[in-house]
Amino acid sequence: MPRVVVTGLGLVISNGIGVKNAWDALMNGKDGTAELKSFDTSQYKVHRACEVKDFKLDTVFENETTANTIHKYTYTAAREALKDSGLSDVSGYDRERFGIAIGTLAGELPPFEYLLRKAPEDKANGFDMGVALTYPPSSITTLLSEDFGFEGPNMVSLNACSSGNHAIAWALDLLCEGKVDVMLVGGGELIPQTEFTHFHNLKALAPEKCQPFDKDRKGLVIGEGAGIMVMETLDFASKRNANIYAELKGYGMSCDGHHMTAPHPEGAGAIKAITNALSMARVSHEDVDYINAHGTGTPLNDIMETLAIKSVFKERAKEIPVSSIKSMIGHTMGAASAIESVVSCLAIKNGAIPPTIHYKTPDPQCDLDYVPNEGRELKVNCVLNNSFAFGGNNVTNIFRKF
Image 1 (cartoon, helix red, strand yellow):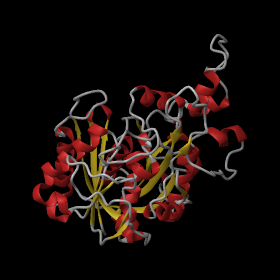
Image 2 (image 1 turned 180 degrees about the vertical axis):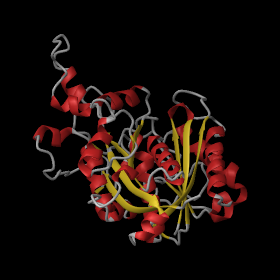
Image 3 (image 1 turned 180 degrees about the horizontal axis):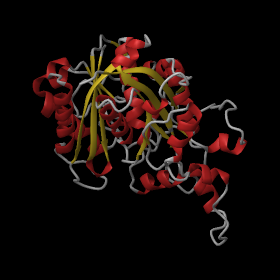
Image 4 (image 1 turned 90 degrees about the horizontal axis):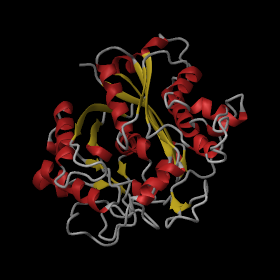
């Protein structure tokens, strides 16, 4: 089976724009949580989220309205990843062997929300250029294909909060099957009011901050942003002497279907996803140096993930550092596992792991090493990246040092 490597990275998150700024912020435990500004929250009990701050999109679109609405974070992260990989210009290659896979929760809802709520009785209301360009969600890959010249297969993964890892898994399959040479993969998300309202009404939102694995955790914080990787076969990367961050060894999927919103109490689906990933990657329990946790900060999820890790890794579970960057950037929904995959590659490349901040009071039911409050230098050869979504849609992927 062809080996698949990661050669370019791009990040836009609430505590840093660009890979360098974002990584520095994560390692320093910078919290991206602040008062939500994109819509009025006066009628809500929660008013905080992890919005991207001070974002400026370079003039790349002819239509200014489009530039301010259409997939701006995903586009920016993708452009950074392609530049990083040395593939900003693909005109000299067979572009039909360059594909795209992007995960998201629901595309981009804000343009629709803004228009549809003004005058729903008006049949012409709710449609303008911003809506046209972001509907359907596949417009995200259309934009990237047109602008970057990728003419191979493309797919938008709409699979709740594991969408990014689903996209990465699909891309790995295409590369391993020899159908493509390069895949632009990842995920992107904005914070729509619909999404915020949904989690608010589920009473799943933390009022102030996200505290994964802490005894006093009160829920998740909604976030936004994008994480993009350039993945290619080792043969293709070697021929062009590309820089390599890490090798993607495999993935594991499951769907326990336990409940629409609650995880399986014993972590059955999570255990299956982790076990399947280890099997495909041919990685032993002893090889895993770091686990990039799903770690939402919700009462049930953190216990479930801890149980799953302990079930798979047995007595070694307490030796493996486990951290959640959602404590700093919130839950970025369909983009979350893609952003966390980028961070997993950076951990391998930089020999360091980000912390779980806001960790103060240990929970007896969450008794692993959660890298509390301070980043840690660590030789990282193998990272396991967990993503456990609503409906029991679970994906774990595994990266190794090249």
